[in-house]
Length: 95
Image (cartoon, rainbow, N blue to C red; front, side, top):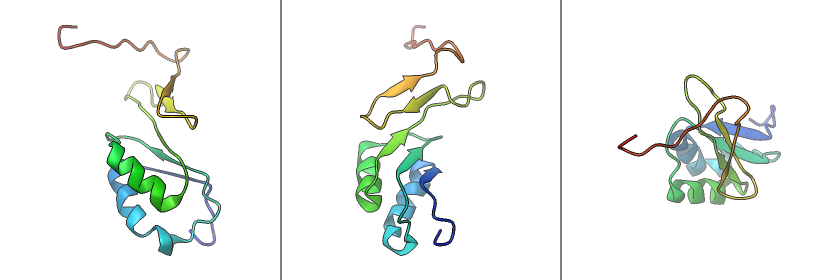
């Protein structure tokens, strides 16, 4: 990390949570955002990761058919649906 100086860190919430425990040793001074994907991002994990790295954590939702079905939003906890890429239909247990 020290020589690469990433501005974005992408990973699963569980991996990001582990990295958060070592954030002070990673020396990622150029980091501007963290993107969580592939697992549920709990509110407690979001808070721990944001507190450790001092940058916003956005959450992406995807599927095998459309990897970027939605993108997390830096302005808040919502998501931007990429409606021009796929049709997203919310259903309940009764379809």
